[in-house]
Length: 341
Ligand SMILES: [Zn+2]
Image 1: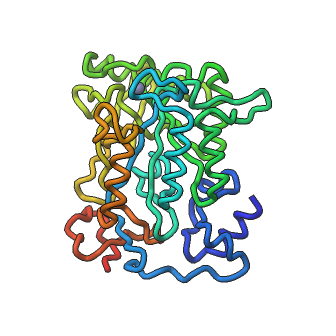
Image 2: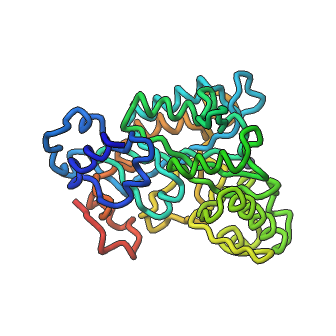
Image 3: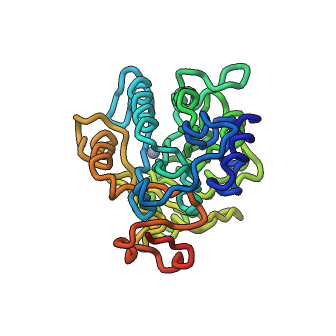
């Protein structure tokens, strides 16, 4: 913590003063490695947006993970080694993880020249989150691997959003697991109580499926707010507005973001065409295999080949910075925050 406090004060002009608590959960903070080497000296002045090809109207990959196993049983499973390799790649390519809630609230506070990525985990499988008897994440869980990669790449912030079902993470227990996650800057989102196909339920049933999981989450961590919902199978209820807002049994819910299953990067939340009620995600997948063209390896290749189309931060979270040529894409209400160049 001490190190990150020093760094954050040193780069105070570069980074916004807000949301430090959200960033610096374990001392790794979202400070670029180059700044870490320059403790005691002034950080580089906020760069000209053009020098980092800033484009905060560019697209953002929201990656989707399920189960981790050395013997994948379906296209949704990944080996721990593949997961680690994908995180290493993201770190090498200057991505910085943010939560789903940060993404939809437009609070994307990452260094100039880096790209946001949203890591999401569905179904609350035990391979995602396990704590040892001392209460620390086990090294072979996805959480342990993410923390390890973040330790090796200090600019790669360890955060993610876990969309949970039922009473999640049964081996560790919901209370211990969800408490650890929320205390360390991770987000817990809703994935319905029984992983229901919401299109098969009537409006009362849809709201019951969503509200009852919110109850499970707040039973585990009293007072927690749930801002994000991932639709099971990516299937919308009818009407779709019930995914955003509703209630049952005296429990009301309201989501800032509703997440789908496929199959491409999301628009920037500052893009006028961004729809927070239907945010696409990309399945983590190798370059070959069923529907690999919609998977993470192929999409990360495409984003790397087309850097102008990818969200690149200007390092100024109070404004929305983009090349003038893209001005027509900006969401109208954000005009006063716009920094075209
Ligand atoms: Zn699911």
